[in-house]
Image (cartoon, rainbow, N blue to C red; front, top):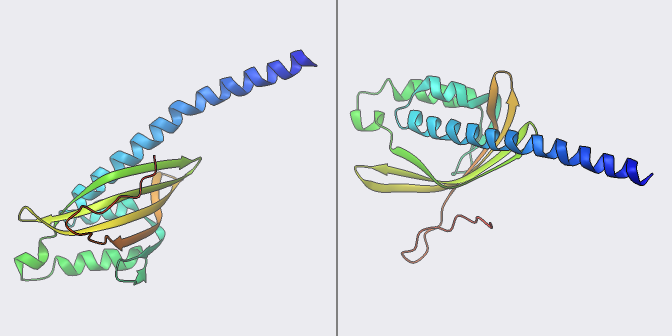
Amino acid sequence: MQRFIMSCLALAGFLLSLSVPALGNDQAELARLLQDFLAGASENDAAVHDRFWAEDLIYTSSDGRRFGKAAIMDGLSEAGQTDDPEAATPPEYSARDVTIRVFGDTAVVTFRLVAEASGETVGEYFNTGVFRRRDPGWRAVTWQATRAAEAAGEAPDSGDQR
């Protein structure tokens, strides 16, 4: 019996060692997806948005509105139709304090989004995205954006509890 238990433990250890590299690959893939998305969002790239958001997305904005992918895509079309060049130019977005947690075919990505225009920070938001791995890859199915509170001249805390 003891030999059987030891064999099971050895097999479990072996299977666990196989899953660790996959976890790292998923985290790296999600980190690349986020960086590619932010670069594309900084240019109002509709193809990048189409790739990033799931068809059944539920997005809760920092001002409390809830909508789906279709509204995001419609908003991109409207942004491209304006005659005001400043309105058509989005800020440059970057992610700070990124944490990626993978749970099989589901992942949670949290980060501080920084929006900059003309070299100045024009907004900071805490973002949480839930992703599902679907054919053909990871897609954001739920998104929550919250405007980061400003604390007496200090940068907002990311909340990372590592």
